[in-house]
Image (cartoon, rainbow, N blue to C red; front, side, top):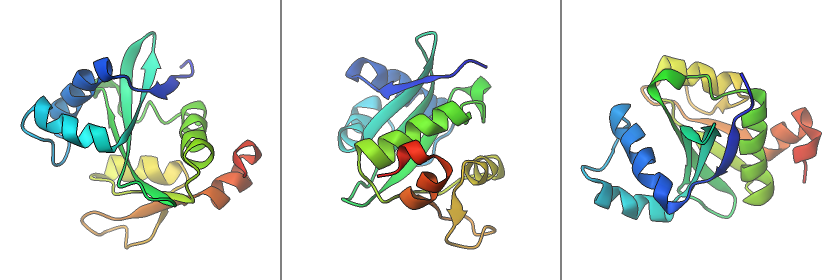
Length: 151
């Protein structure tokens, strides 16, 4: 599979991102796009594109000076396929170099997502059998694996 291009989503991409969230039964999706726009305005939204088609959306929310929550939603035929080394490197650069975060955290909603997060280097901060386990990835851990991401 060719490397996906990760880039900031523009306003015209947001309806497609919302559609993916609805189609994938994303947790806590607002009932309308108009309601979702308020959330999008508070998040840093990026997308993984293949041939100009949005394959996955990455939302950094609950952003502080040191951390952010990462949500991932992907096209129905793209589950897990977005998590390539190249795509992950691009996400890590965004989080740890561009946004200058110390760590990002996730709460996988199913076993498939949990496995993807663990393969991507996230470590559990709660019991993995919890209903919504919390996993984190630190800048330090990524810097050891990918020296080009070190600060």
